[in-house]
Amino acid sequence: MRKRATIAAGAAGLALLLAAGAAWWTLRTPEGRPPLGGTVASFVLADRPEPAPEITFSDAAGNTLRLTDFKGKVVLVNLWATWCAPCVKEMPALDRLQARLGGADFTVLALSIDREGLAKVQPFFAANKIGALAPYLDPGGRSPAQFGARGLPTTLLIDRDGTVVGHQEGAAEWDDDNSVALLRFFLDRGKAGSA
Image 1 (tube, rainbow, N blue to C red):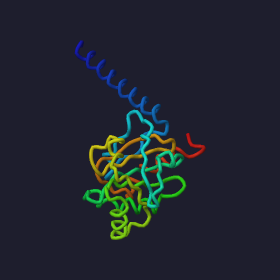
Image 2 (cartoon, helix red, strand yellow):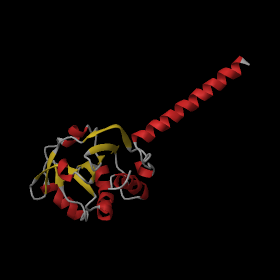
Image 3 (tube, rainbow, N blue to C red):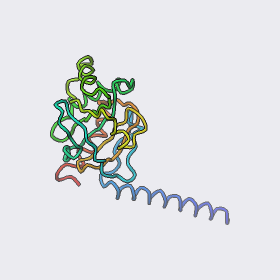
């Protein structure tokens, strides 16, 4: 009899712990948990979302930019290089994603760390018919360390407030339904009038 009571108490304790965990998650993200499946099943949601680091980079015209220049948009920052095979493989999907969702609310910021800068990226874009993405350049290669990236490609999702909400290490099919559902979760969350 005592054994049954102990098991019942343990089961009740476990149920209470699971319910508390679910309640904590709901309080943390009022809209619920974003969908993670397919090639973004390994997307890591930030336990404690923090402001994105103050990195600087340039565009094709040589203008110096900062991530704060994109505040108000959901930004998918992709750290990549032309010599990185998985980066090269996922670049067409990122281009299609920018063509599909890019605009006033969202942008893919494909940030190349190629030392040769635009001289290397521009021919790569042309040869691979990358037309929707704008080339962004960090020829000094400082951004991976500033983001704490362990390798390439690393992709970080930044919400409208400039907060890193999660990251993906390795390549993904960024234009597939699962990836788009993840991005739409954060796009919808930040719209005026949403909870």
